[in-house]
Image (cartoon, one colour):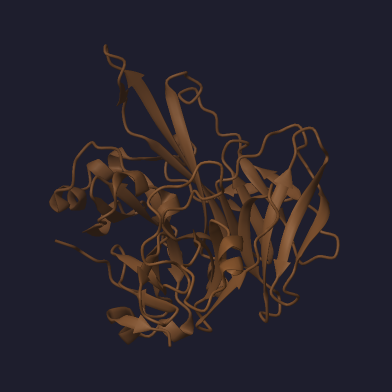
Length: 390
């Protein structure tokens, strides 16, 4: 049985799955919108993606996408960069164009204007593409990044919808002796932010500048005596919430049983920081619940909550952070077994829970987006029914 928190009619939002559904109709975009903690879906037509994606990727090709999915998004502009297997050729397609098709292709979906744009294939060798709206809102840019270890220069590979072509821009590499491993690209405050949880920081720039300059913001030094132990593990998550970039750090202290299997030793600890403005301002602790823990929130508050016990979800299983409520940074959503639930970390109460229906392999924060709805979709009627953008 699902339970939902009261919805904020003034600023509605949904939890959007990054894996897309495909339908055989002619219309490009179709949204199924429901209130959190239930999941909303974006469905695309077969013009954007084949109805039956190839089940296996061919070796030696770039085809690693079995199902269409959202690769990146500028959520404030309702732009979604999607990657999909190559659409099936139509009857009018020539054999030459069919043979020239790549294994995967990219579309930018504009939910506000009900349009989709297939972008030309980018050059190889660039990592983790992001999408961002132009400052005037009349166009968008798709940007990939290439940083070589030991080289103090890097490259931005940029496609502008205004020009319709790719260009490569030379930029600085602020950490030339580090290997970058990007887990996400976030559009925020007119910049693209590449999230690297291995290097522990954010690499960012304004891609619309004539001469873009890359900057790096390290995550705060959050090593504790517990985390320094060899058996401890941690994970990080970055999201825009309440108009600010938030970094969430979750520390899990692990021990091993006699058979070598890891077990949780106590409750995980969680800290939230806010980005204030780059290298000069750095970070500040967003709130401080327990001063002697430097603001760490213990997961034991979840397990001991009367509302959690009343929900009869699995106790002492380790919740996995899913996302932050974009309107209320005290409200976090977690995966727990087959459920997704919201928990107010200040009041220590569960605010909504529902089965998520996802496979175990998809249960991660990268599989969901917290999306504030554009005006065309924000009406209560639009959130009660499946809305056809056309």
